[in-house]
Image 1 (cartoon, helix red, strand yellow):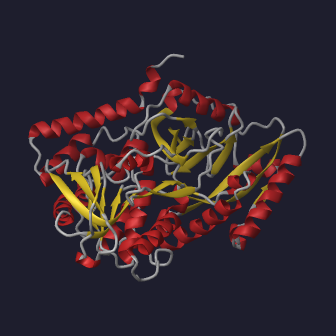
Image 2 (cartoon, one colour):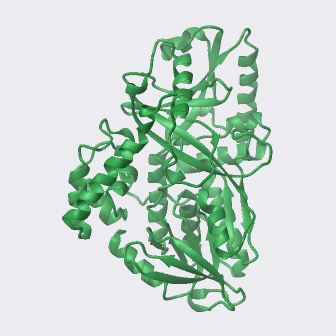
Length: 509
């Protein structure tokens, strides 16, 4: 399937010609899920994204599809159940993007009471979530644990609970969801920010749109072509994650509802921290953090601190890094992980629904649908694991507002990727053929699009992709018609971004 700069231009032009039933603003995982579900139900759907797809939170998560065990301790049974169901569903519809892995939770204490409590929690979780026998937890005593996870701190170690979770490539999951939406008829454009919203006096009835709704007109700026496109839709959904409040304000003043928190991750060679399974660490403030292995690296994360403004790439600070290094070196006392061992890093912001008086880690990860006086529908909160169910709820609301019948939701059963097209997990190396595939079939339009979100070289390659950046610029330039000056700018921009991700090394506490 072609999904490129050319289909982008065609789709953007078409969005400006015919009224839609649904326009989705936001090309992260939530917006992608909404577009896919709506298109599969037969709605006339468009989606616009301010930058590259998954360029914000949806490429900057911990990359775990997990069942929500920690929410059990917070008493959020509904979220636990939903997360567990959705984890299983993703394993069915996209097994290539749900890589099973053991999660090991070491327990420390003066007695074994903590281990007994965790075992009871695991039993309750598995009973409620109907976990299959092969995925049920085990309890490892110290000898087994230390045989399998070498170098763990042993003082007051009581053993560990071990259960199955899943690792994903978050950006790849978003891309494959968008590609599926496009196969089902959605019109999709990146680098097309929404810059204005206004109510229509009446909705057009073209393309099956409802004449009973007033509808909205969205002004969309084409960052590639330089012009502005006006898109009319019976319903507009704001699925912009950290920018939800900003988009809500395009159509009139709205009371802020989103609270942002920042999470960072550090990438270390697996030779320096040789673990074979996900290991849960306890941080100095009693939070859970993870060490997650994949191929020749592990990533360590995450932090959870309030953040003031929505940003695609929030700054990583010395304090952030030290927090994770202290937790890692307390868990593996002999490891001695230092700055020079960190070969990559990333940070993202979580768009949570604000809860007064709660700390970042206490704020619920549940989602909420907001309806503005103009009719704009916004979705805030949520988590990667539950994106599909979130999308289903939003599309159900859209269909109700349209007042027409549609096909039922099928996203829990229909495979995300068509037979024979399953993509590999994140790759750290690439050839010229991979670059052209990213451009022609995955709508990569810049060097950063290719290296950061199509092949993840900025995170997982030993040189962060710097060794191939000029080659990538040449291939992209040939495909989309860049001048020599533009190619040089793209190379320089990518190098600057890598330097910014590691700038914390120059900070002194």
